[in-house]
Amino acid sequence: MTTFGRFTRPLVALLLAAASLPALAVAPFKADYRASYMGLQADGVMQLERQQGNRWRYSLQVRNQMADLRQSTVFDEHNGHLRPLSSEDTANLLIKRRNIQADYDWADRQATWRGDLRADRRGPVALRDGDMDALLINLAIARDLAAGRPLNYRMVDEGRIKQMRYTVGGKETLQLDGRSIEVTRVSRVDGDKEMIAWISSEYPVPLRLLQRKGGRDELDLTIKAVH
Image (cartoon, rainbow, N blue to C red; front, side):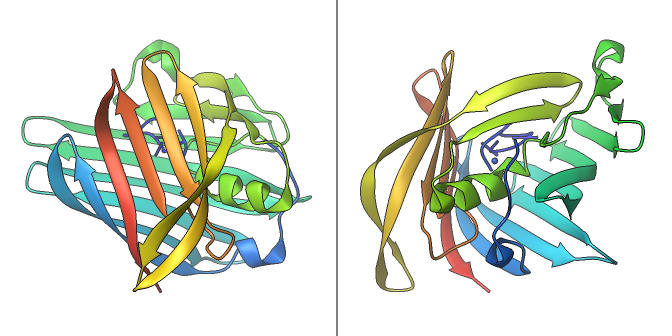
């Protein structure tokens, strides 16, 4: 999934590898986003839910009349690292449906995938400490920026290993609930693709996520509220 993730494949390969985690970063939340996907307005929801034991479920959904895109990752925290345990990526479009599931086996230190992807992308891929999937990097960016750590990650997703490095831009201001909030812009360029996130130290997730391709916006998520 698009840092941003899978359907944003690297944003929502942004929505965002190692590093220790501040305690405040892992706490349940639900964030509502105003979204634009392929030029059409949509609704977006990002959510972090506690599960049994030390497990959490992190999910992102973007939906409009043309598409219903869903990503989720179950993860735990181990020795200061966020570890993906399993994930699912579903895209329901007007004429096409796509579903991919992943298992991250840390006992055998390998990741495998199944579903609607090529045989050569099913793995196994060897895992290293700090590896994350694309969606989970969203949490890492906000956390690591606040801690002053380098925004460098190794993404293991859909049978691929990819190094991701974000650069820090300037300060900007975004509006949320009638408040002006100072944010930091971070970005990553990969060929003709650009992923941008606007981060505030007050929130556990980016306030805005933008994925561009060939100079045109593909997916734009702007936060409306955090519960």
